[in-house]
Image (cartoon, rainbow, N blue to C red):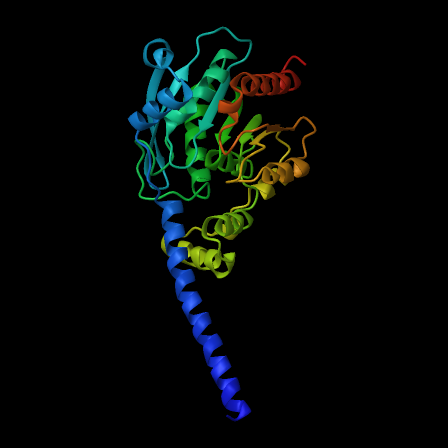
Length: 320
């Protein structure tokens, strides 16, 4: 057989393999995107049951003691629904903590963190991101448009508690990404607690793709992003909390499970290194997986958060 026939056969085989892999990559990309933006979401009752059975949560304070007021604001996909938990404990300054839950969960998952802030004298705001819980929406964008939704919630918070209230944001996973991205659009945030956020969406998705599919992340992530931009107007390449962190002077407490294999702790380490405010902190929780830092050591977690916000309160006191 002539050499050029051999070359043509080899090139044809390579082209066929590339075509097959591209089709396979497109199928995987579509499935990956669907899992990310339209995951199976827990109902409020499912969240309560899970936390009762696996985390020992009780709800007596939430159900019978705390003074709560439901609210509804307009978000990017319709109504966002949540609750304001008023704290009647006397404080020198009005303090408010706004809590953002993670992917697949809802406001109930924020209650363990609400207790920490409530004990420290904070009014607490919990709400369901678009698509989750009782809020409207047919998909999520992992913090992309959730930033705009949080801004709407914060507008309500300021109208209720005033522009002088001390405002802290707390977020877990997707909620942490949302809170960090808020730093680029508002200048009335006093402190942020970011639990297991990713720093760069494309970097994160490439890491996750290799772990979940055992396939090269190119072109799976790239096809996913193309589909996302076309279907949801959501561009992975623009979802980079590390940019928001590096441009802000707000003190941030980064918390991350040292054993997190879903969003690696290096993401929080990278963002901490770029944080401008010298009061920022980084805490890696030993033996904690993704979004499990509180569960791994709730006493230490509560102490970290309480000490951090108390430190920022002292620094920002009007009487200082």
